[in-house]
Length: 391
Ligand SMILES: *Cc1c(COP(=O)(O)O)cnc(C)c1O
Image 1 (tube, helix red, strand yellow):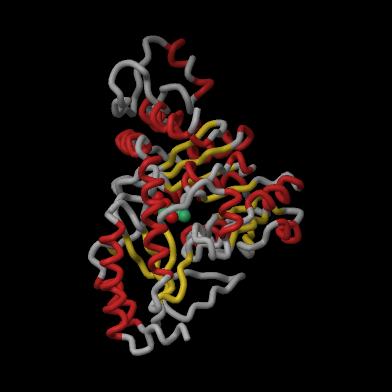
Image 2 (cartoon, protein in one colour):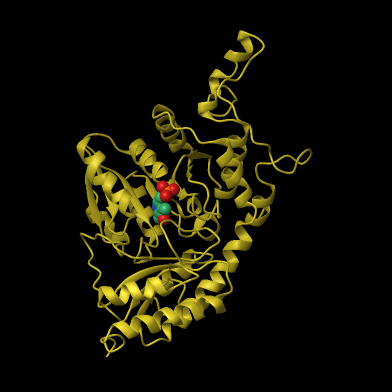
């Protein structure tokens, strides 16, 4: 089945209520000891104790397993929890981890904090390294973590080359695939061993749930699932219900926002008060060729370098926007803006103006463009240098 059909059919029965009901439970009752003991062999699949999941969570996991084409998907209470549990499953004291320099900030904080304190050494690598990553692999390297495109600067990674180098040394590749979602980048088909989603974003799609998902190959399922259980993480059935409902429309939402975001990005490229637009779906983006080769579509999250560099200009631009809300996260149905602030230690990313991150969603793109034009005018009004930077 194609992905759109899986999104509609996955995790539900063909008779009875269309949507699997919310099944809330801690204790599950059994008729006798034999029935209770019969569930021991598969504590993560059989209904046994609510902490390991109820029927609503299993329905979501089943839908995700089909969508990702993985062995078995795992759900956890946030995107960050998906990252930290997966990393905890692949590295231990004395091991070395290769982490992409453009990774989501809290992932970097986990490596430099908790992992470092527990004896795991992290080396950051250039997101533009492909097969050259071989030279960074040490005898004790136990995992390579990717995020493509990179957080805030949107460099596209050569995942197949990294996978080839990693697998030659029997090292698993982990990928934070939130930007593309399972719809626009087929992580496991490209050789990724553990693919992570902040389901908080597109899978949920409505800005009202926090959740993470982990899709693994067969050898990695049990190690990751055991960490989730060891840490006592359990995901609310109400949230599972909402994510499953959000997924039904993932295809239409993502294809629609892709077109709107590209229209807005192309308009921004024509502006003299915009220095550059960072969006791999644009033909002149440095990551476009790799994106075209590997991805099926593009997300609605991209960067805009303004041709203005004063704090007053940034404030005027952001505060003038009416249709772009100021707030963390993204992937809902509403457009958002934030200043893009990041830490890099390997590949610097020189900027002459302020970088902002835009999330273009389901409003009419013409209205969004009018809103952006007003904000750019407000920015120019307070920044004498605006648009002269370009020359
Ligand atoms: C939002 C995000 C996360 C974290 O997800 P939460 O559910 O907010 O914990 C991880 N990676 C990327 C790329 C994200 O955008």
